[in-house]
Length: 343
Ligand code: TXA
Ligand code: MG
Image (cartoon, rainbow, N blue to C red; front, top):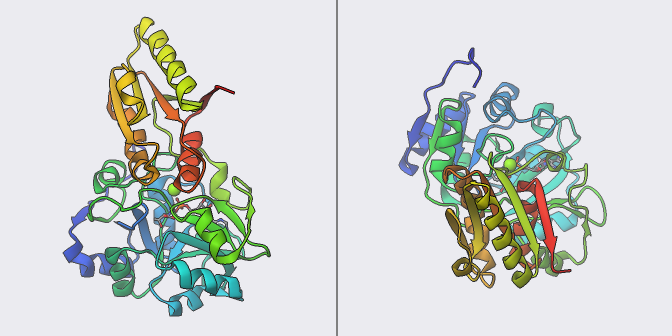
């Protein structure tokens, strides 16, 4: 916050106070709420001034469009048009759930929500609190992840409180997010569709529903992929490769830094944890339980900043299938430095 910005009073609301939260949304305010993926920072998607408050609170670049959260097919028809048959197939299979689809936008959606594109990103979240908030508000809710831009996405109410207190009107506390990684984003405005961001719904599940799709990860088509993401403030190095060589490389790196008098933190798999000696350690989970690792990933990235270390080392040895794809995608974006070993 700059010196001249006024601090807002941020209400901390329980899930029983949805009506109060919906009143804030209807009157043009900002409310953070839980979803099954990560916490979102919501405002009325059709109200330009309300959406502007999201960009301001997060310090988000204006050309990065938001996902519009809906609770019914009627709301879908309010914001999107020319919806292809494939979209209905995906919605029937995976909504409510961790799938965001890009469709042709209707004029009612302001430019600020779509980043000036003629398309709109839409998702129906699989979380009771989120759905009741949208229902009670009676409007589609635009919501990016409820973190300061560039920081790891929030998977616990405490993460939101830490990043956004004083910058938004309210936070609904709803426990830990079930999946812990953001939704998968698919562009359905072209044929075949393309995957713009791997996420909570796996590519394998999507392919089993609609067949092969283009994987154009990091494409300029998803403006959000251009920016720094998920980064701790602390220097972070990702060590990638087979587990055995990666482990010995990590140990060597840790020793080198400690010999220089630096404190070192590590984010590691359960299997490697006993062999890693460092100043602060966060165990993500087993390489055989990628769901667990995905759920703990953003907390692990935040841990590196909280542990009072000079440098963090992350173990990037998760197989790139199912949840492993989004885990490696987020780790690579979070770490500015990478060491690839064992090839
Ligand atoms: O799980 C999630 O998706 C969470 C929860 C809160 O729903 N939201 C979330 O929003 O991750 P955000 O803003 O952090 O990420 C939205 C992504 C960005 O990469 C953005 O560029 C892309 O979706 N996006 C939004 N509208 C788009 C559009 N019209 N065309 C292409 N990409 C779009
Ligand atoms: Mg985000």
